[in-house]
Image 1 (tube, rainbow, N blue to C red):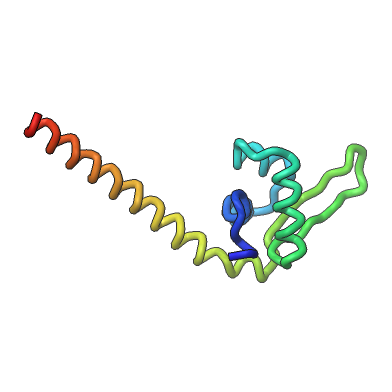
Image 2: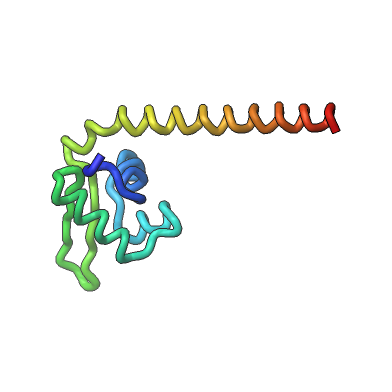
Length: 107
């Protein structure tokens, strides 16, 4: 959980599953993350060997992030979590509908 835990790490990994992204792209995709938080999470993922960081000698410097081969092994875990989350949202919708129907018939 240390490696993929944290508020933003799972989302970072999820978005990198579709390919290499720049810092700004990740920030826009995730939404609501501060530059500082994104930077810290990216550094931790890099230190853990989950993502790689490539710096291009350009002005301004361009930095791209991608999953390492080891990071790619998290794909089935994240897909399972996404499937569970989608099912959970459906479950909540059904529960709410049942509660609403129950309230309509009793009150």
